[in-house]
Image (cartoon, rainbow, N blue to C red; front, side, top):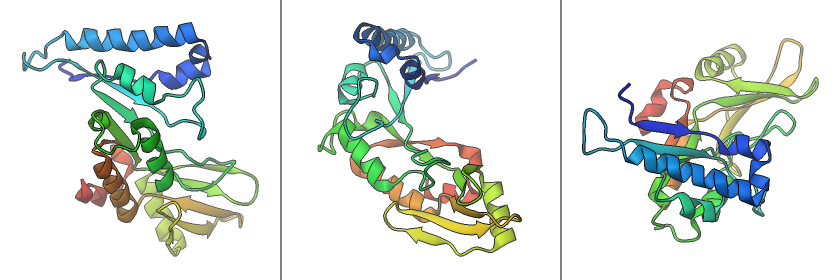
Length: 228
């Protein structure tokens, strides 16, 4: 179909099925990624025979400050560095309905990049990290029981128009949010990207020499593209 290659997301599934908890199975999983990358690199694009098919591999942040056996860590990054053309690092969904809060605190992003790349911001593998930036937000229920869901640009604008809330800047996470009460008088907190929050994450990626990946293009506001 004339594509440039493959974006593969399997690490989270392997972790869920405990494949990564077994050392021998974990090695086989890594070997599979290597062989897939090598196989893709052996194929030339039809429109440009000098360009090879590429492999982008999706990875998530560690689940705690101390690496667990099923986490993707710096050793895995080095191990797959030659076989993978880019690592799409999913730096979002930090909070959820059970623990409402920011989508991707800036300090969390920094500490994850530092864990993967070390303290050297000129790491040879930094350019292969595509820092994931969310173009969606979350609307969390703060009363009436836990709940919430993703908010796209259209939803966000509708909430602003209906409730006319005051935007607040949360310095700790470097994100904007607002509060409102719904028709049943339940309180909500909405975290959604802004030009300022996106700009600070682009700056963080630039400091490390990383690229970016966006989840997802159509979920943001049009003027987000002014920053790209």
